[in-house]
Amino acid sequence: MLTLLIRTILIYVIVTAAVRLMGKRQVSDMQTSELVITLIISQIAALPLENAERPLLSSLVPIMMIAAIELLISLLMMKSRKARSLICGHPIVIIKDGRMIESQLRLLRISREDVYTLLREKDHADESGIKYGVIEPNGSLSILTDADIGGNGIQSADLRDQIGEAGSDGDNAESPNGDDSSQSADTDAPNGENDSQSDDTGTTNDAEQNAQAGGTT
Image 1: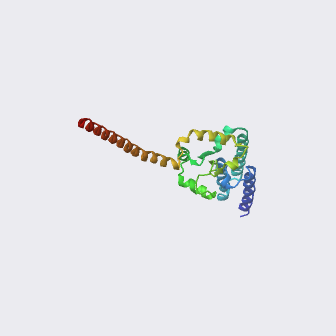
Image 2: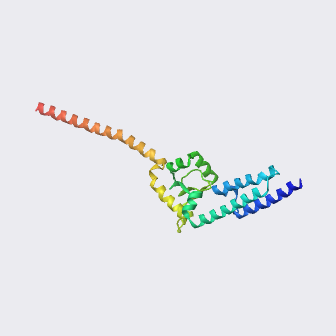
Image 3: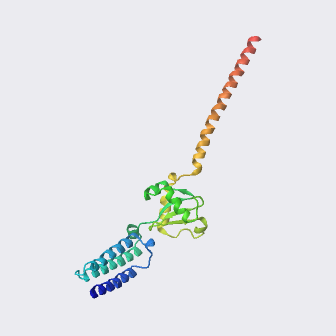
């Protein structure tokens, strides 16, 4: 019993130290790699508690190695944008100039209703009035308006790159007014045909009247 108590205290201290070394983040703010490493550490830490005959070092050494690897990865991501994008992903623009980009929604496998749910959490009823809507690498939605951007523009290089790519997908963005304009064009077309038909009828009637007048003369 005393051995189990000592093991529990040691593992608690080691795991807490390892998590502190990896940085202070909430679970919802963790990057993918950080969440995976946290889950692995929790599984390894449980092994010596489940089996008292298992050497304590067989769990402590892997935990410290994983924490060291995470620190090295964090330093690499700080130095290299490509490494950060490869390991953690990059922000993806799903709303631009008040319109959703359908190709980006398909890429992320999320529906318009999912986006509306995220917008309501940000106190927005719909996408109108939003300059950019961005899905961050941790899955949260960030909203930028013209007032938010201001005169300094967008400082994030990753986001600037994604905005440039989103601009090429502008044809896929749905516009609520697009259908109305096409419908109005279709509505105008029959009217145009009716006008041309009435003009042809008037011309024919004039010709017949002239022919009758000539025959009477």
